[in-house]
Image 1 (cartoon, rainbow, N blue to C red):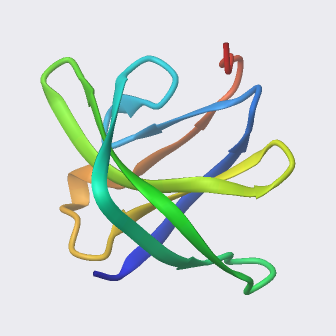
Image 2: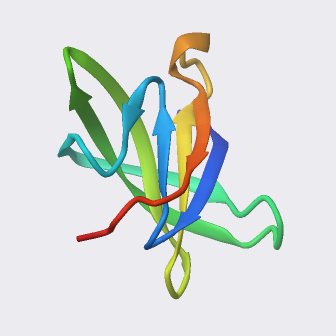
Image 3: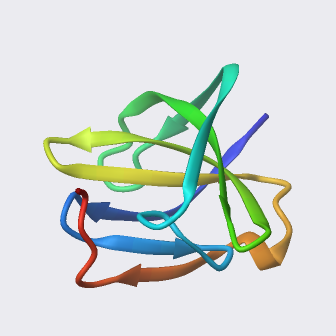
Length: 96
């Protein structure tokens, strides 16, 4: 499966992907699934874990991992529905 970069954020920020705030939802790792992704800036390859994020009856499958210390990248499957695209980073989130 191919993956498409949607956003990145620091540990102190949050992002909303497909209407789901990544800091305010339930994360469930998809067993055995690894996403092979490319950093959009430095073109470095990574192997990120895959998760299903669920909140308010919405579930979004993402791949995520750390690009560098405190900077995480988020990807969607390339066949994701348009409604699952990132709504953009939001400030004021907490990684707690």
